[in-house]
Length: 152
Image 1: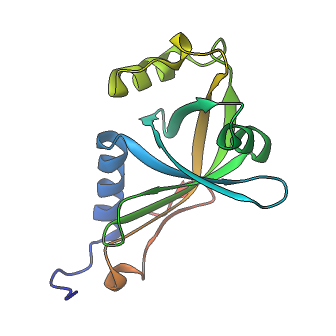
Image 2 (image 1 turned 90 degrees about the vertical axis):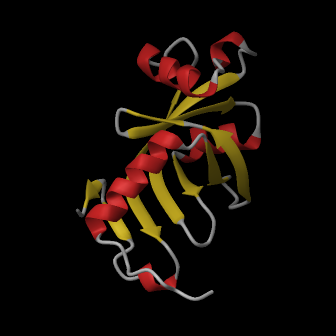
Image 3 (image 1 turned 45 degrees about the vertical axis):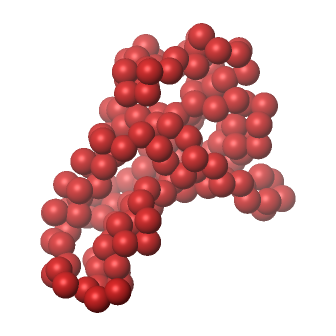
């Protein structure tokens, strides 16, 4: 692949990341269990109140890993438009999830997990690190958030 565009500014990368978090519906969710066994699944999500909200069954490996591990890595895009988000996880039962977050997920996806099996839980993933790049020419400056604070 030939790189024809100049690297984006950090401010433009942040705008692009926030736009994608609002616009996209699917995210890759990477977790690990206590023994380090990795798990990677795509899930629907919504960006709401400066956090990613998603839902999955607490009885599956991803749900258990999110609840017990307390952290996750999320990925958007392909190798030419990457967003990686590392975050701290808070689990909520269907009865305890904030109505605004559940409503935002329902509005974006058309699905309300609270109407499905009681084994579904909601997970808030608050980012503490965000990286974004388009190809190798944007690897420098890819760290947009560190320690939960936007660098730009």
